[in-house]
Image: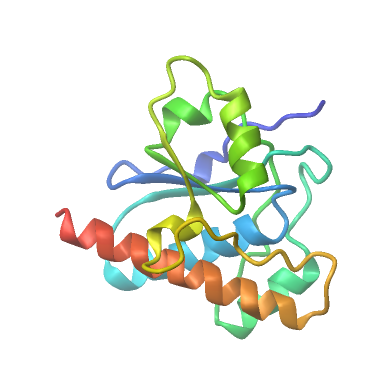
Length: 168
């Protein structure tokens, strides 16, 4: 099963370290990473942000063209991101791992090492009134599903910035 390490360019020296997780790392999690990068940049906060998938089908591939198009519509370029698979080291490298849905959460828990230090939550657990919900999975649907996914991950990004701002 091919595995790639965390992207070196995703690492910063300051701020929280957050990993966004979905199934293949080509739709929801790269959109979440892009939304969070934009939100943290706009707020002037440093953070380590990355994304991964629980599966290995798309390792090394860029985000789905429809995800890239939706991000571009929002003024964000995610075309340089490449899919990678979640690895046990991620549970020590990141402070927070945010899964797109219950299946991703369950799969992440199954590979978490005994010495894991990362908090593991659903992405939408951070958004008031959305705890326990899944981020919309647009992969098999129509293009407009990517806009709904963007709305979900953008709300997560805003909640993260608010949480980080209140803790500084």
